[in-house]
Length: 174
View 1 (cartoon, helix red, strand yellow):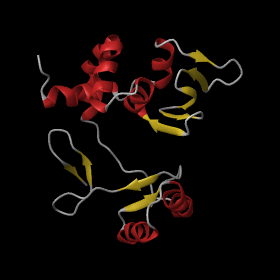
View 2 (tube, helix red, strand yellow; view 1 turned 180 degrees about the vertical axis):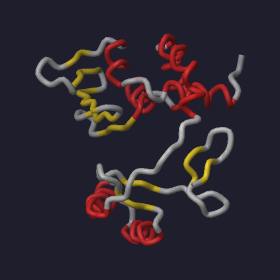
View 3 (cartoon, helix red, strand yellow; view 1 turned 90 degrees about the vertical axis):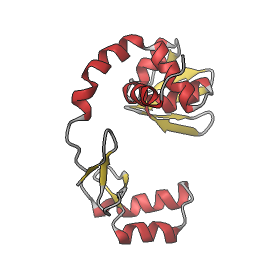
View 4 (cartoon, helix red, strand yellow; view 1 turned 90 degrees about the horizontal axis):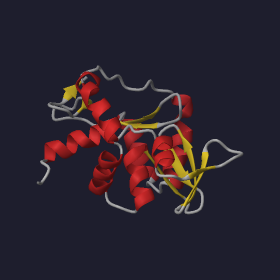
């Protein structure tokens, strides 16, 4: 049976938030005895902080359970979604019941913090190799800003040139 696009989308929403440490524990990887954030895997030494990971051995990282599964199993996005769904059925059953109420909650954009802007500009330019002219354009146009945690916030504009904050059953504009 072929899963519909909607079924795959629903599975993606559910498995995306599976905890990275849960994935590592259930797949039998070894937790470092001295550093609680560090794990030893066949792909190398991985550090996990909340939903972000970095593989120190390979110099790569990512965020979320799907990225993590893609990294650990060397597979594509769709395969990672199904792998997580198949390997964490109890989590998926638990979460799918509460998915509707979660997706209907109001979303608010992170607060702008201009004192962190230079930090994200440096990161985007030096680490992500994004051209300075593009970064400057996005900042001037208000489509890119820094939040309190020095995260880069990129705004997506819909047809009406308003910020899109949800893409579930219909665009939610603010």
